[in-house]
View 1: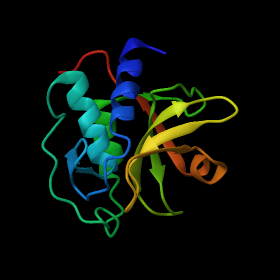
View 2 (view 1 turned 45 degrees about the vertical axis):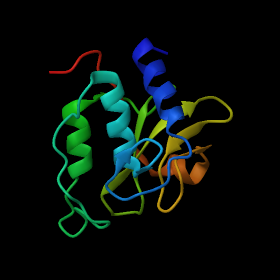
View 3 (view 1 turned 90 degrees about the vertical axis):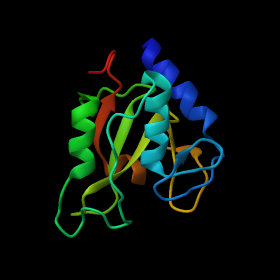
View 4 (view 1 turned 135 degrees about the vertical axis):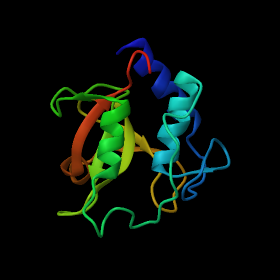
Length: 148
């Protein structure tokens, strides 16, 4: 695992227990899945990747717009789905035919894979990357070595 991935994963672990709060990104106070990734990004690079507009729970669904996937492609390095590594950013499609709109960081690989994420009304948790979760992964990314 790269030093950047180690740092990202260590920071994500510090967010465990942060309550779920839609659109927030404050370690220990509240966050959603995007807020968790934003917080890790700020820790790694010292600033936000871009200004995040307000969003609703059903954002981009009516239009079928893959806004989160496009944003991930702008800032992260895409990887093959089969090249899993600790510290990878995972993008999930929560339902068949829906847009990809959930994120997490892979915290363990191998026989007992896990990921850290903030999930609807749960605090940030390190949960098993079970078969139902694995089936929902549509993209895998890593943090870049440097940012523009």
